[in-house]
Image (cartoon, rainbow over all chains, first blue to last red; front, side, top):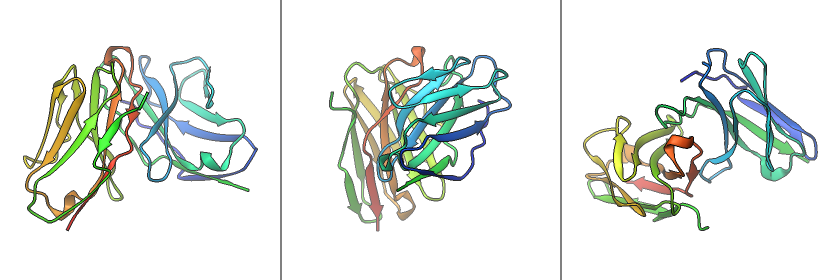
Length: 111
Length: 115
């Protein structure tokens, strides 16, 4: 599975959009981009995933560049409850189901 | 839906004792995963099952660790004998269908402290 690179931390004002970047320059054609987050003292929570098209659900939007070498998770109106560690994971769902969590981005939403 | 249920939520034991962690996956999910999280090593996959059969246990640290899934609604992770370095938060997760994707739903975790 392709490795990912994320900034270690980011800040965002409450009510503003949070844009979390992820680089995955070695991604292959059959690998998906998944995003999870972990709020303090809780289990990781699935957010969204995509292959090459942009995706949106009730939690967030995922923008994948045309060459698929990077992506951005967008939380359109961040709240204090969105403070968490966000993990970008690239995985081939046709083979193993192993999620390899890196160090992620610690997002701090402030008043 | 109650989500993934884990018990106990907290466990404090002494070195050398046997520890059993329990997990009830979401009904209808075919895959079950055990993870361990520590400050030093982050979140690591220990083992996963598909249709109650262990598929990959390469993450299990050593023979002191064992996991079973006797039926589709129950799994255990056992540590015998426990050691202080086993102190961590252990998460169980389940997934609807491994063949359709890897969206995993995590339980609240069991915080294990071995003295």
